[in-house]
Length: 439
Image (cartoon, rainbow, N blue to C red; front, side):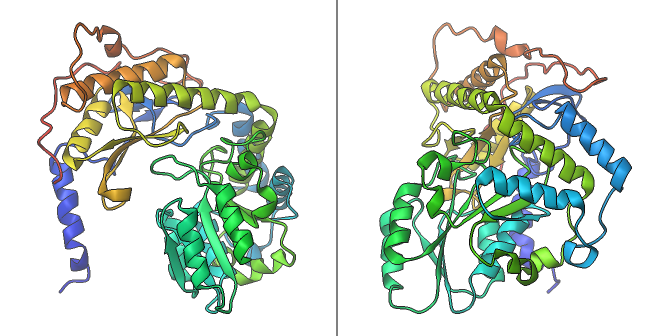
């Protein structure tokens, strides 16, 4: 048996997916024109699958600061902060994040994935207990494997089941850490955080909330679900990422727990990973400043999310439970979802295709992420395009005398990036064979 034979079933499914005419895991952009537009196969394409919630990837101030940081401090740190030391801007970013969240401490990591990996695997040891939502992100599951604590799963967003699991551990020695997410990345639903806090208090547990998809999105100041629900004082650790609302890469954890700083010497993913390069740190600080100074971006994001969610729901699609920036169209057939995704790309709209086993309840999703940079015309174009294809595929009922002529014209906006190349508008194509694809 060869070393890679263990992946033969995965390889077979992937081959079937590619043979269906679309490979959602190897999409290639010829160019990126703006926060919400790219070029795929020579065609201007509307981006609805980037998690670019505040539309800051082409923010001119952030770009200039990033460029200046390279000129001043070079391209990288070439080592971890434990081994190679911290740059002044690393510490500045940590102070800014701690101040933003009203916490005493902050640690910055090289990715959001690494932040979960480091914090969860380090906070709970072999004599403690980790209690996680069944629909937790892969980084949370991987952190549970890296650590040594026994792991207990509770039913997704179910406070009663969480309480039942903790009740079984009531007289068992060791600390208990509950991990939940602000906005879940597949369906876009939020955790019932107030109820979780009640359970946490009852059983004397600790609570960590991953605000990766809710930072910059929820709350009066954009601090996430805990702020919106008024329970920040009961959340012991907040983990987040820079790769969504802050438009860069990296992760963090903030807390007011006494003795927090020792985690820099205890968390192996922090100790043994090269620190973020100066250019990333500088652009992240700039994006955080914009998040704080421009609440109108968050307001526009919420309005866009509601417009897109309601439009798809009113068209007859089965969507997730809440109108957040992550909007999932839930389909029962992976082959239909794959063909639908391919048609959307062909006609000028990119979003994410989510397939089993990575999805809850083994469903197939067309997963969109809305941006504050989307215009009403962008959103209406996307709704109308998805509605037309949904009817062609038999997912939605036919409608009489519907004029789709406006769907064939890509909504024109000014390019954000100076010197952006022009590309052809997407041409309308005939219906695809929805029977093809991965079974």
